[in-house]
Length: 74
Length: 141
Image (cartoon, rainbow over all chains, first blue to last red; front, top):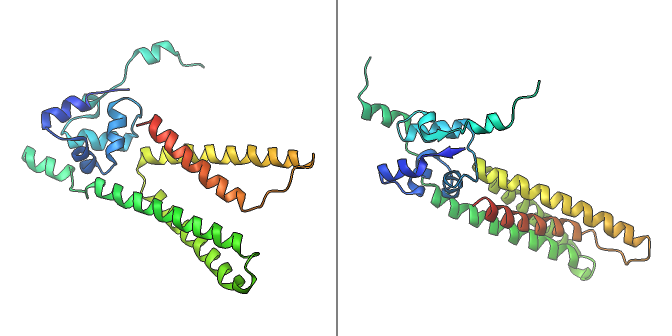
């Protein structure tokens, strides 16, 4: 999953630690989300989006190619 | 009813304690866990060797083990979702490693390999869990 977290943080001039404090997680967790090593749970994704005053879709981008590459099996 | 944009943002982003302070507390809890576990293992290993102090050593071993469990639970409860995932993987690593080690030692004992103390099992689990924590923290950093 791609994320615009770094851009949004830069706009707000927030450090990773400040964002982590806002959403109640460790700084390392924010870093792992930004570098794409960890996909947050839905509640955490909402918390992060709300911290920026945005919708989840404006912060996290789900690449459509992933669905096309792996069609659902019936 | 209408809210100003600032008021709405204030309402949806409540102030929460700064987690980096909590990270320090988590580290302290982990160090206390290691110290309590070490104390318990040392006391248990000395019980059979220093007979006059058998009872105090046994008490020390049990108290140390209890304290280690409490500190471990406190550490696990303070984890966020990402840290919980790392801890879970580290536990899986430790469980599998201990299982393989125990099976190997059991197999080798049938060929005359000298017996290993039962104290080695919890110590090995803690060591493998620590290695797992370091490995997975580094991998998902």
